[in-house]
Image (tube, rainbow, N blue to C red; front, side):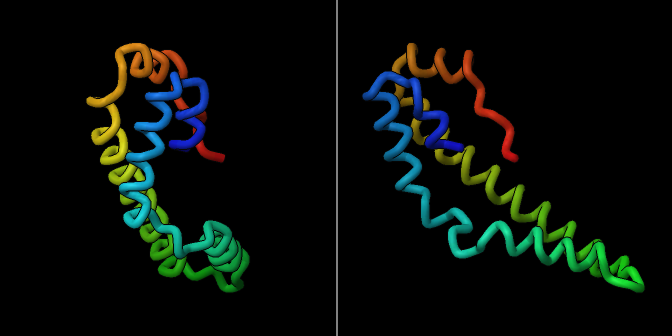
Length: 101
């Protein structure tokens, strides 16, 4: 998402945003394949009998990952935005990122 946001920015602002991303990359969940969570949820949903506690556990883990990702994105933006040009910040305001699929 951050790399998508960098597209269309003035080059200096895009570089600042990419540098902030790289500085915070270790905080991202890069070890985890996002398909793994989807596969685990698919298994929970298709289990018979249905295990409500497994569903709640998977949902809780998903929310925790999403919250952590949001915190890291906030940190990246807080690192980059003060150093970006007003034009770059206006571009981000006028072209919000697409929601994740």
